[in-house]
Amino acid sequence: MKKALEFRLHSFHEAPLVVFSAAALSGAGVAIAWPLASVMGFCPSPPDPGAATLILILLGGGILASMMHLGRPARAALALRRAGRSPLSTEVVFAGLTASAALSLRVLPLGASSVRALWFLAGAAGAGFLISLIRVYWLPGQPTWRGIPGLSPIPLSLLFGFTTHFLAAGLPPAAAIPGLAILLFADTAVWVIRCVRVEQGRKTGMAAQPFVMARRGWVMSVRFALTTLLYPAALLYCGGAWGLAVLGAGILADRFAFYALAVRHGSEAEVARIEAILVSISHS
Image 1 (cartoon, helix red, strand yellow):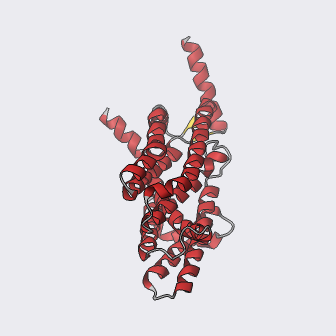
Image 2 (cartoon, rainbow, N blue to C red):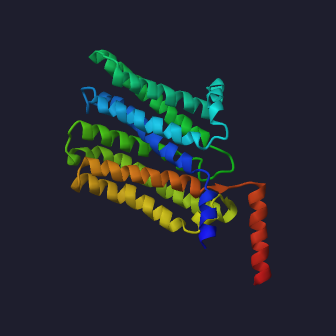
Image 3 (tube, rainbow, N blue to C red):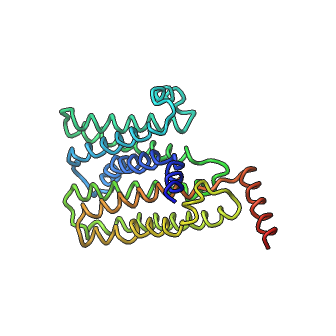
């Protein structure tokens, strides 16, 4: 039993990508949220430099984690040559631009107008990164990664970003709830559609992680509980910091579900499905 469990854990090669995507989309959300909030009149003054530090920590930590998934980490810089043609290369460029803007905000002595301009640059780069992240996984033969389910990073990223800035601005949690409720509703709708897509896809495709797919109810329930139920409860009754921590855990659970509950469609999956049907017939 122990060896079987170790094998299953070691076979989940996407663990570094879970950490990378969870951290990076959270950092991008912090970069995007302030320009949006500023345009809407919620945050008239630039945020505390600590917000730029958070972007650096999340994006930098995520990029380091993603290096563990590369066969040759030293050659990662070569991917920049295909920026604009490859979604993955474009993602790397936008991540670097977002981190560079955040670093400038943190270390350079800037005037108010320069700070605002750099925040808008960071927000634009963060949005580019988020779109590129979605495009990387917009693959044929992956029904749980395309369409509406593939858009899940957007509401999660914005939820994390707005919560961070509302917390930094000292707004009471109750004042932030109405605005965050729209994003939370969108996130819940996307998650329900993704769960339906997983249920449909597993009947005709091949599960990337059969061990996790067999326990998909637990994975789906944990993700739903953290993001949809516990996050707003923590925000209202325990304070913004607790709400942000629970949301971060929910984002990590979402990214784990993204990779672990993936379903492949293709000739290999169709052969496996037919073999399973033949086996069930022979045993009946």
